[in-house]
Amino acid sequence: MLARGVVTAALLLFAAGCGGQGSEWPEGGEPPWLVLRVDAVNVSPYHARTSIPWDGAVPQPTDGAECGLLGVAIGFINPIAGKGAQYLCQLDGRPRQQEHDPSAPDLVVAIAAGTSAPYQTYTARDTFYHVFRSEFIIPTDAIPADGLSLTVVDRDGGSQPEVIGAVRLDRAQLVDAALSSAMLVLSDGNGGLQRLELVVGGSAQPSEETDATMNTKNGTAAAPMRPIRAGEVLEVSAAGRYRVGSFYDSWLDPRGYPGGGPKGYNFENEPFRSAPHGSGLVMVGKGDAKVGMIVAPCARFMSRVAGPLVLGINDAEPENNEGSAQFAVRVRAPSAAEWLGARAEPCAGR
Image (tube, rainbow, N blue to C red; front, side, top):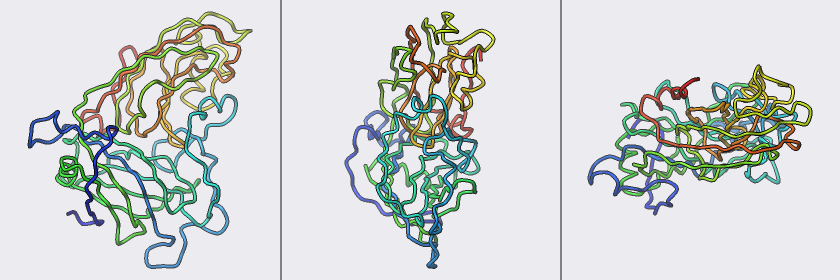
């Protein structure tokens, strides 16, 4: 047991979505990758050993990021707004809370190794309890000697996140949990984290692939596959022939307009805003934690968040488009170097 946090284990049969594929690696050996699913998180109403609530009676600023693209670190979110925002946000199926307690924290769970960039959940706002069901994939060989840190923070808009509680798990604990089909129940006696349910499974699945075709009048479409796990590498290529708009009506492919075209009709968030109008795009995530890339005609990237995979065309007003775009998607587990660096090499030609 490492120094910070408390761990107990309860037997649990895995759902297929979180690995449990022990037959795919040698008996008695370690799975090449671990799949961690953050389920229920429960935090105390107050800072540790005080009666001071996490937030004040007046609602904290949220920076408007109910739906946003992830910045370089927790606490930096670029809200999705303006023309066409509904196309980038429409697939967020997270239920809205009916009542909010402004003194409750805005919960985010982050997983990291050492000083590497964290992988994180979306934000659950103004709540002491939330079930995330966010999955993370980690190469077993990427786990350092001091283990993985799981940190629960209060992410208020406009300020650095405040740590509510943290636990640390070493490689042996995680591998044992994967091999025994156990759910780890974590808590931090020195902080405000009362319970974090972590389902751990193993995986030997190298990659999954899918194809999708979309009518460009729809703007964006959900890819026909399971939600992406934080830490997976996505390789997306696009093809097609379509017209974007009724005035700027050249026939295009996913590279978009030569020279950029009428960028004022692009989605307003980067990396879409400055990309060629009509270029292909891909986005992964949920709620305020999404990552996006231009597919012109290919993209390869590491996702630091989990959630649905969305494909589309960089046009905020797609109703008058004509034609279709085809996407080929390959999702694979990361290498240890990719996961620790939180990045993948760009596809050929980019």
